Length: 366
Image 1 (spheres, rainbow, N blue to C red):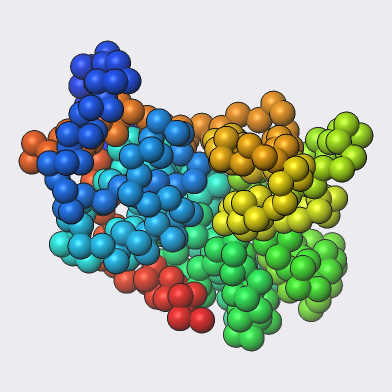
Image 2 (tube, helix red, strand yellow):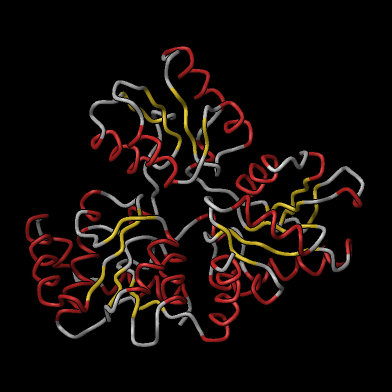
């Protein structure tokens, strides 16, 4: 079944009764289902999930961390509160006796969707014509299983925002050049931090099927896929200037999915885990403007009342696709499992899973 068919099924299949229930009724259904399923159920919840959902998570974390925790459990049912590519990774890493579900199949990721397998294969052919067999592909874990599989098949590996520098260093020991999928900003920021000048980076436009690069191809080191996170790209240089003017003592910390200009003007940049740990360990009374997803920023504000914390962009909305996972869909998914039925299973085909696992293992074994 295609993703589109899954989406259509999810939208039409959820019974109206769940949409009409109060939050209290939905929460009680979830509580009852968790009690009934017991150790057979594991609910991983991504940091960007809403509080109404994250309160029921058995573990909070980033996408790869949660997939790994899912694989380490003995739970038969993994109900992933995140987005589609995260549930795919969980299905890849878990065993055949474990089953992964996504409460709402509309919970996708715009960044992951900016690199599909057909575009990637075209890009690989065109780039190989330009620079021969000198390229190794690496992909952010925020990508589809098909892209992970492509990367694994071609000798590459996955990366996270935490280990991006180490994995890029590794990749450059394998080949002269890197094709970095699918987020150009993380790729650019990581390469720049490693001392690779911007003049040695190019951008591949998958829509125009064109390499944007004015330099000598012999100098080219990193080819960045023209993709981005729709949330993190909305943190801007004017946002930073406004914070500096209004709050001169405020520290600015952002995610490396932000643009190069924003990262360069910030005081610190790092993964979601780095942001959380930095805020939690910061001195009482310190001031912070955070450039990452709003649900997490609000949670950090709530959990750190002794610090002055704001969003770097005061007009930022939560990630819309992450917010697809809500109480009605979670209650429906768990209630169905409690009654011996399954909805929205995530199944990665064996041929895709095989090479995707290779890409993941090349990273995990470093």
